Length: 180
Picture 1 (cartoon, rainbow, N blue to C red):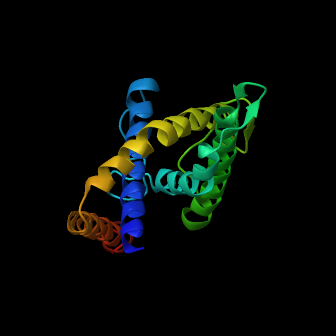
Picture 2 (cartoon, helix red, strand yellow):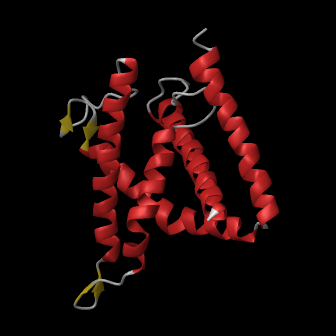
């Protein structure tokens, strides 16, 4: 049980960092707005991606393994894509309300996109999250699982505790010391 918690914590951190890199990449290279820290913490974490990734793992892992077909066509990937779009859109909407409640605003504005709701969610980013979610569930997560499965309990313990210490120090710095 402890091993699974440690693994999920590492996945959370990995996907939070990947999400941060994705957001920074969009800002710097695609939109050419320049660099800004896309997370709410000092370190390179976009925690909504970490939570979203864990949610996708918990909600869709069993569905991913099923082979649903219409005639001879496997429709599981289509159902997975639609499910990812729905789940990540709901996560993003909830995250925007939490951010607005806690800090007065949220970190993105989708008003320039068609089919947006209050600038909080929009069809274009939702489809991108669907594509990213497919890459994550079908390519990255199996790779990360292989990597964590190769770790001994001792190595996993050291790694997860080290990352947790860094993460906790970042939380203290961001939400306590920076406010002083």
